[in-house]
Image 1 (cartoon, one colour):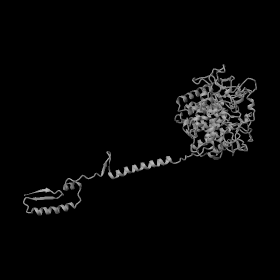
Image 2 (tube, helix red, strand yellow; image 1 turned 180 degrees about the horizontal axis):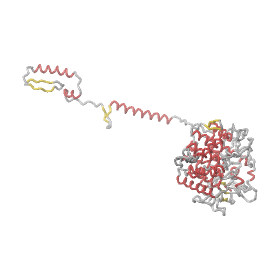
Image 3 (cartoon, helix red, strand yellow; image 1 turned 120 degrees about the vertical axis):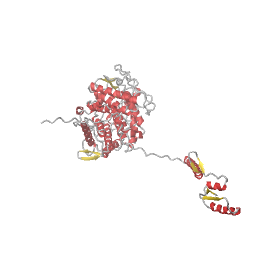
Image 4 (cartoon, one colour; image 1 turned 60 degrees about the vertical axis):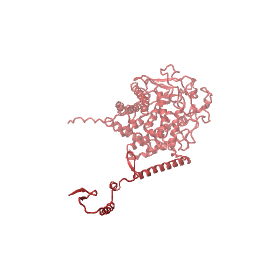
Length: 618
């Protein structure tokens, strides 16, 4: 009888009950069998069957919980980490102990250097209680009784704002234009201001002005009937009564009453103030409460400008200094800014009304056509609205007048080029936008700003240039025009003189400016007592850094004489245009305009299809 079992190596094993093999033979055969079996490759389980319990082998793996790794790899990894840490510490120690060499950024260009100085002029023009960081050592608190000293006005707190020029009068008309220009430059070139480290500074300058403008009318009301147009008096008749033109004293020493001029019919002034507040509301859009306050004030002022028609300078001494020739251009200018600030299409409809453009002189020439100034904003409004056509394409019903404005802007840009003879130039290359009349630089800087801005608009719209008649011109030509004009102002002229005080080594030393010409030495001069300082041939004891003076004559001639304001007096409006032109030209040219911020309040535009043609009739 036999029974079958399973060979542990995989084959059948037959066991006989009666086996004749002796024990010695069996043992010998088994040893042979074992040697043959062991010569084969055995796994650990099979070896354990044969050898029984043996000494525990050292583990070749490390269990890290989430993963199991080879002990050898683990050792190498830990070793490398330790070595890297030692090496990093060694390198750190060498770096700390080694002498340091600072990495210097490339030096700022002339436009950036001049920009920083030009902004300082506004610090020197501040009225009221000055902030601690004003950084003009020879200026102090002044005219803290403005409004209170005039019983005839309802505006009792008119402290603050800016003195217009070399005297102590506060004219709202040119001051508002200056603030609008500064705000426009910040909206378009905030990245360049930031790169120059001046963004906070310029915003502080704007807010100092808008805070004051909000005091000059009832800014909380929806409807008003008056505005405080001016603080101080500029009577030029030479009478004995103390006033801000007759007296040559520091603003800090003014102790006479300063009258307030109110206006009840002043469309130009109110619309310009509305433009200033509306543009500033975009600058301060991140400060929601203040921005809304500015927008509300702008709406109120613009409504007043439309309801109470009239020129602000009629019948007062503003006509001698800042006479307004009309208010239609301010209507287009103010309405454009209010549209950008609110997105309300009624303002855009007004700004693109052909009748308004006609009254503003958009369809006829004239000697001052195309010249942006504190009096004529038409050119600025045309550029501002051309921007909308380039980037938003609102279509019907605005397209026709926007296309007209765009074409007119292109023609104006052509007139700036030296190849054309729309404007004369001095032998030194300064364009005569005011046709040889005094104080030319304020017009030149505005043109330089608009030319650079328009070229940047075209670049942002992927347009390499524009047409002047049949000829195509690159945007580089426009920028070159702006650069040559600003370079002239900064010293590249026949006299080798910088017309910006404090820039370069050769600049006017006898600026027509009361505060700069009187030393801060605790000596208080009376009205006539300061005349000897006004008429002195000596240089000013105080340097009014950044002030752009009125400029040379049409022959490139300049007289550094304090008493001749046509050469040496700086103004708010002039310096605002200078700042705008400088920031547009400054820094990296690859940093263009900010395409979106100006449109931040404008809703998406879905152009209305034009009306169908009238039914055909035979």
